[in-house]
Every structure is written in structure tokens, then in C-alpha cells.
Amino acid sequence: MRYFGVSLGSLLLSASAYAQSKGMWGGAGWFMGGYTIIRGYEGFSKTLQDAGLSYPSTATAFTVGGGGGSYLGRLFLGGQGEFIFGDRLTGGSGVFLLGSPLRIKEQFIFLPALGVGGGGYTFQLEGRPSSASFQQAVSSPGILPRELSTGGAIGEVVLSFQYLFRKGPLVGLQLGYLRALGSMKEWDSGGLKLNEGPSITPERFFARLSFGAGGIVTPTTSE
Image (cartoon, one colour):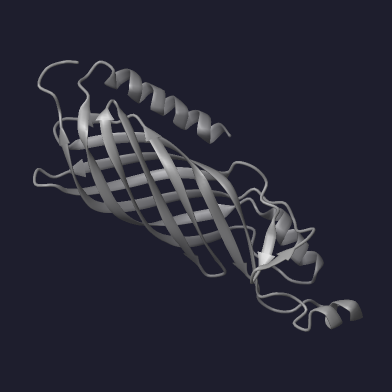
């Protein structure tokens, strides 16, 4: 939770600084690609170990997505979502964003924001357990499903740096942290609900590059 506190502090500092400047109005949209580090699912890994399987305690993945929003004076309202593509883990997330943009010079924008939404993860399993009961073999000939999925509410903090060219193109960099807002413990496999699954609280650190377009107008007189 300390990451949310640090980012909230950055958001408030930005808002304080921007309160001394003019608001800006406009909007932007972007595609984004990035890289993420995922952890916080130790309970899942331990459950697999107890079954004679193994799963890494930390995963890495590439991400692809998009987003956008509106600059409304001293506020930014928008949203973004992405898909996760890892070696043994896939998933996705989508959040509503609330931020406080600070325009530096003419075309550079610093945008700290908080996001709330939902996300999910699918873990791909490999190998087979070292042993199984007769009942397990009768009820599930494959012994274990190959994919296990879970999801829930998430929160995101992001520091975005955007450069808006004069004719509209936009490039940017996002650095941030995403975490489940509560335990994810409802599991399914291929649409089949699984009872008594492990409780996990995934978290992710991420870096994203964004490319898009937008337009901003700054009033010529102070508000």
C-alpha cells in the first residue's frame, strides 16, 4: 500500500503546482506496449508444490493495450486497458483514471493518475503431479486442468510523461504499480468453477511506451 501513498503524494504535489497555473482543455488517445513484473501469488505456487508441481514465484510478461481521456481544466478523466502475454501467464486489466496534469513548457505533460477497475490472470500449468488418488483419477482423467483463471478488483497508480507534437502526434512513457484491491480466490478452468482454491493478491510493476494523437488548448487568461 505504500506505493499508493507515494503516488498519491505525487498527485497532490502536481495538483498544488498546477493550481498556480492555467488549466488546459482537450483530449488524447494512445496505443501502448510495455513490460511487466508480476508477483503476489505465493499461495498458488505453494498449492502446486503440494501437488508435486512447480510454478515460478515471479513472472514477467509483455503487455499491449490502449487508452485515452480528456483534459478538463486541472483534471484528467480517462481510462486504459491492456492484455498480458507471458510464457506461462496471460491476462488483462482495465481501469478508470483520474489524474492532475501539469503542462511543462509548451508540449510536455506530466500526468500522475490513480486508476480503479478490474483485472484477471490465467496461469498455464505444465507437467503432472507426482501422485494422485484413485478418486482424482476417476473424476478428472487429466488429473489437473491445464489452465486456471482468477480475477477481481484492481487499483493502479501511474506516472505518465507525454510529449505532444504541434501537429497532433503524441509519444509517452508510463511507469507504475498495479495491485489487487482484495484477495482473488474465485477460480475456474474452462468455465468450470473450482472450489477451495488458494487466495492470492497479485501485484505488478510496469513500464509502457505509448503512441497516439491529441490536442490541447490553454486559455490565454488566468482562471
